[in-house]
Image (tube, rainbow, N blue to C red; front, side, top):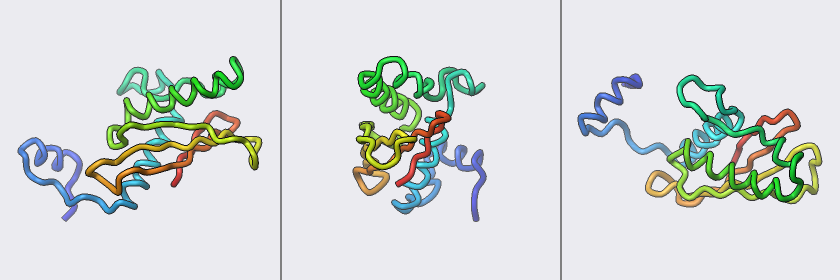
Length: 136
């Protein structure tokens, strides 16, 4: 039987095991989906959490060129660290633009610790409209 969110939270608060650990591929898929949502959101767009999301990533490159990309890498990693606790020690690295000149591509790495298969590497694609899609 599948429990609803509030039922799981109640069991968790009582110290009861809620569910078995998810399969690693399910966990990574969930992580990529959540990162896409976080990184495509902008601060002040969420009523639940002030500052939730990523500042406009297009402004970083436009304002300062290559230095802006390094700053964007830092902001990506800090945003992930703040809003996605399943990914430990996140790092973002901009890949050289060789194939698709319309998108910036980043590699996001981090450790899933005891939850999953250890270190994971994801690909984040920044589109010209400022949305970021994260995939395995």
